[in-house]
Amino acid sequence: MLAVAMAPGAMALTPITCYSDRFAPFVITQGERITGVDVDALVEAGRRAGLAVTVSLLPWVRLEGELRRGPASEVDCAFAYTFSEPRSAYMDFVRAPLKVTTYTLFVRRDRASELRSLKELRGATIGMRRGFRVPGEFELMRLAGDLKVDEVDNDEANFLKLSAGRVDGVMTNSDVGQALIREFKLANVVAVRPAITVVPTYVVFNKAKNLRHWVAPLEEALGAMRSDGSYDRIRRRYLPE
Image 1 (cartoon, rainbow, N blue to C red):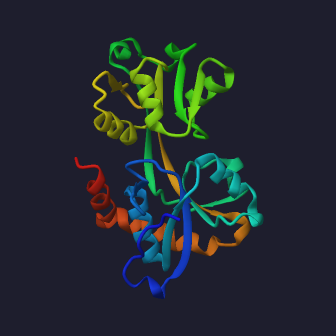
Image 2 (image 1 turned 180 degrees about the horizontal axis):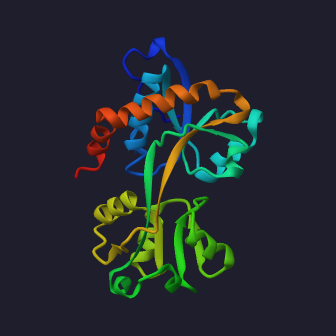
């Protein structure tokens, strides 16, 4: 099982395993270690709150399914989820954001100047990470069948398909998209501005596991990390300005 190293002094803390999926630069595998912006921020927030956080991986769709299973699941904690009322039935949300996600549409450079609103995507095929939802107009268009969403298990596949002209666009986190453009040197792929939506994403606990007493300490720790600059320092390790 892949896991992050424990923070110094973690033996005095309450151990917990939190799950996510690979999502560079927020969740990155480096050999047997898991690092990234979200991982490092959660480990530090957990240390401040009294938790020794270990991070392990599950595919995104399976992870939410595990949380729905409630007491039958081994999953106690996961990240990073947007809030919705249906999810609140089986997730306890730590309402201080782990990060703020900027959902951005990426297209081939030769089409970027044509797009001035989401309505111009009618009939388009948009690549997305399986199980992800983008709140707002984009989701309404998806539900209405005004556009087709081509779901795959990782953003790398989406961006290579976009570069090759096999989808009309990719919807994902702006930082993730920019990192993949750099990694694969995709000069023909650009972000459409402005962003589609900006939403906070959260750490959650399996509601059936009665772990809500950790919500307030984690909220306080994450808020303090924003205030004292700790979060920004972690972010700059993976996303230099």
